[in-house]
Image (tube, rainbow, N blue to C red; front, side, top):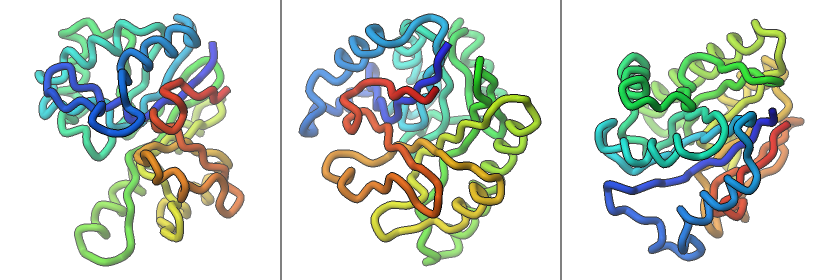
Length: 227
């Protein structure tokens, strides 16, 4: 009955965009499945916080979701920057129901309760104040994060926050996302998006908030224990 996280699976059963062209990603799907099955039981929950599938539509993501459905445990999926299949909540729920993907839930403007935690979060954004588009996106993402955290705080469970983009990376700081986290007294978050040598600029703590990178290639393609 434990909670785990593993981001950036980048599945491509239908789209032929295998990550194996990148260093360290050889046999990555087999490695994900082997490590997942070794560690995760049917009573556990795994959050996949973004970049789940390369598919361009829900229909194109069926085989990728079927792979996830076949793995042990419950799965909670949130959006990453490469999840072009992402759609409205009603369409995604219908997709899951029609394909009998009963172990998968979508995290989007909500929270999802597990045995010990209320899972919350959003995609986030990398923002340097350089344009109107960025301002609109970060305002939307902050609103979604706050909605999700508030929903979690209405439960009797501890909020567990998952983002796709890191709120701090090297010298870059997304102060807007951090402000939401600080306002709600969040002390730990989990994020993805970063790969390869980029992990050298990852930040494990900032202003009292612990930050854990859980991208597949940065954690040996193994789900990370949350609690």
